[in-house]
Image 1 (tube, rainbow, N blue to C red):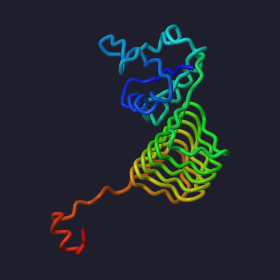
Image 2: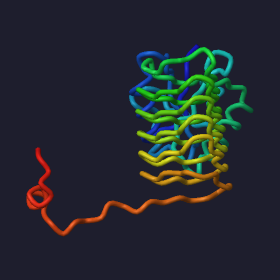
Image 3: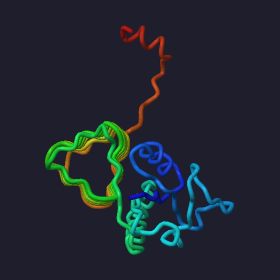
Length: 224
């Protein structure tokens, strides 16, 4: 079965680059208003307005992946999934070949999971979830639908993640936690307690030190 990618931005381009060798991608679609200058191709393939995509790409012989970012705390990705489903489309997932798939791991449809992600036994990943490179998800985690998990995230075993959360680069969650739906967890932030819905967690950014780097190495006696 051929696959249509919904999107014509950075995430669609990223998915195409990863998936074109393993998935038969027939073209792209996006909301009519997002097609500029009457463009009819994207990355060398047909770009079709979403309002008429089922006329060009029959849902019987094509499935779809929604490849857009965490706009509206992932709500747009969830909404386009439901709209495409009403048009009759089924959904593919892309799971990079480097991901070891244990027998008792379940991954929903319309997921994108990039290279060198470790998903431990007993995990459940909800539909429409994006997992970037080099992520670790510990044993028996339940990840709700439409989450966005950036590179370097580490989630310890036994966690339950509500739907529509955002995990920034190198953020992490301790063991056996409940993360409320719609949480924004910024880069380098460690969560060590249960959270409620729609909360925001931020960590202090790196602080500029007064010494230049060479002077700092001599001062701190750090050896190269």
